[in-house]
Image (tube, rainbow, N blue to C red; front, side, top):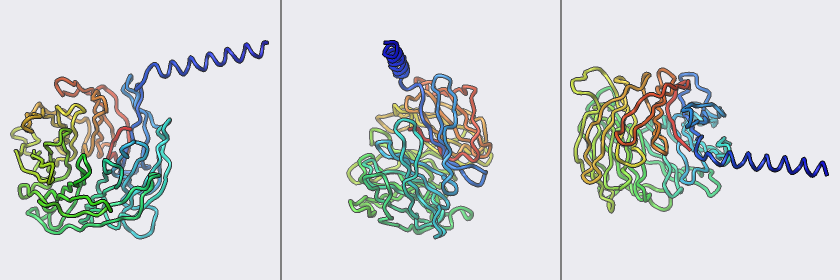
Length: 379
């Protein structure tokens, strides 16, 4: 009788514990951080973000490969993919790795690895239907396509497309430099920002994992601009390019049938009169699509714009210092309440509270050290 009573008490306490845990859904999130090996990082950092306290805590470090610079999640968020300047293979090229995400803990387990068949991968993205992974290979002027198997593993590359051309900046644009590859929301098109040629290349994605130049194969931006990162608004009507060398953001009208881009306007990312050397970097929308943010390395800031969803045009709200140097990447959390900025040259992630109505940011006083931080994404 006493044993039965003890069992019942333990069971009640166990169920109560579950209820207490479930009573606070979304109080903690998992965030993954990619890093640069040049600054002594250990690899991919798996972090727990406590939304109540606004703090980060390290759960795991994945030490596979060398320099997991950029990360991407599968549409179902059950797999994570990372590029590496050098993988575990011996072909001397960059690599891409697939990881299984534990659905309860967020921890990572390596599934497999494939050669990018190129040097210097800078960016990875995943097809919205989960069919393919795309890498933009800055160092080798190419884009690589990998079919994704049903178990999340990566098949060998189905296509490698080489870019050609140059532009006006003698230090940075002697040859092509694909810097990011962004699929359309329906997966029909892939937009590749080429810093070296001042073009955003537009590819049609074929079912077999091949890329075909679209009917309008590219849009040309101003000479010397250096397009780096690209985002498409949730309504699919407009897209925005952050141009590294000219420190501008360019708004485009999107033709959903052909994928073609038409320039609407180009705006400076910097305060009026600012003359110091700076390089634009990353760009993200708020979850509601009402604001867009971009990072400035050198000015060490995030610039904030309000988005007109009818015209696609932008209105500047202001700038927020990032609390460190070289803000290469940042993320806006899924609820739009926080912004986390990775300052690569000061090895710190700075956490900001975000006002959803005004779009403005305010540091919450919390920072976390990650050597060579280059990418932040939320599970």
